[in-house]
Length: 279
Image (cartoon, rainbow, N blue to C red):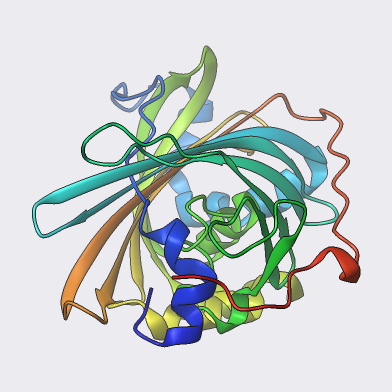
């Protein structure tokens, strides 16, 4: 993804598929409400966003749907994901659907991804990897910290990025999938987020702060009455090492069904592919 050969081998095939924003409910939002709760919500939006990751830990787990859109050179590609996440253990399981080839004739098998502190595991990774083997990627070794490479931003990393919110405004009340939420808009700093993040995400966010074209990440986030993220959209920007151009990525994460069972088991070492991955 970033021009270094070993990183392209581990993350490139998925990243090449990346993109498009998940447009679930709440594409619009109401103006600022007049009740006391709205007044409190608007008084300290940055504080509310800094607490969002902790609210997910309190919730325990959830289902998630993701969408990622990449735009470069006038071309847009999209991938989508769906799965579950355990916020107490920082473990997730996703099924990532790659887009069709431009001719629309090629079907891609879904890629199964396991998200863990410091690591991304992928199955059905592509040519050269046996069907029963996993590919392991060190997320701290990726220039984007796996905010983009996997094609689905780790839900807890997306929440911890908000710990770096420097500025934010309270937009107003709306709904996401029928749930009342408060809409906030602002900009987060990856460097600040890394300093405040959990041990599991700290190094990955540090890598992203160095690897992206800018450490500033604009966002829109929707919090429910318990302060939990229901929807968050980040806009990343990084430099394409091969084409020397800036790539814009919009990553959207939707969280729902809090408390759902999320039994995620990481592969044994014997199940991890150690050979060369085809380009």
